[in-house]
Image (tube, rainbow over all chains, first blue to last red; front, side, top):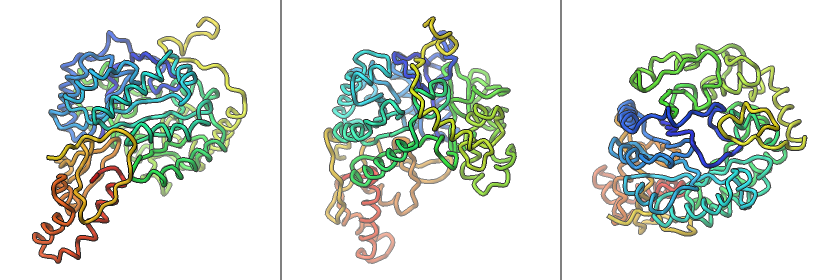
Length: 363
Length: 104
């Protein structure tokens, strides 16, 4: 079981595929240190094994060291998911001394100018590479995470070389998942089916060549899939997300669904929320399903796919994920991907507070 | 205890033999999951479930003992000829080395 702790929604980068919700939470609402420390103890007690410290950018929190130390104390495996542009060698050393287990750094491209343009942060790429070197110099394990889309997919071979040369333990080649900011920027990001197939082939060959050297994880995009992914491993089955203000979600995008009420760690215990809260019960298991999911032989493998995607595309959260070819919406879904990939990419809507609702031209 | 820090720079595939002295790098944690009553390896974005034999082998991967010595110890506790289990242990550790769980 894993806990995704979004410590803050503040971030120096403005990537147009950010997984945070369009309505970003403000700093004033962020949980204080002592609540996070208590939540981690509760999580370990509940059976959580791994803690993913995420954001926004988790290193903007000055109490990150205390949080990491608490994770080590209660026995949680800690994974820092960072943009790394603020991560100095001294900070890394301090975090390592507190017991940090693993660092994951995101890269936007292999070409520095393109990477800085996508993140909208001048000089960011060079800082990320420097931080990656520091991680390895300290003897910490490193994952490089590369969100893939039409504007950087041509550089996939260079990403793989970069990870190998950086001495990373793991590379996450993650095709952008179209929720939140990425859904807003879908046409600017969507690759063609051919590009996706070629990327899969490249990864398969690199895995064989780099066996025992670099672990490569590959996340495929749904729009050209036949089967949906078991989103979050199934609703309320193995992952719990906590937002900066303490709302407990079955999935980090769950706030995009209508009619769900989320409990807060300030009001209830994590155990009560996990086992009993309405939001966790709503799509847990298979009882909520309708056809074609209800009688499908894969229902306990993909758990009906993603609720957020079902709602975003069909307007009904209980329907099958349109990524599934058994969904009546599947042909339209696939066509949407192909059509947008064939059209010229529009300008990005960069992630920033208020940008999602701002009228174009007033930015 | 051996140095469990991961060396910097480009890496090479580890090949396990009877003479190897396997160890777990710092970011691979052998962990008993009390809630579910089983041994696991906690790894970046992964959890490997271990059977009792694998856990018994990994407990002994301290960077000092050779694979041969580990096989010897297990042979003694399970009253099985060492040669019968040595190949199995090498295969297990090679598989784990290819997943980055073990180095030598």
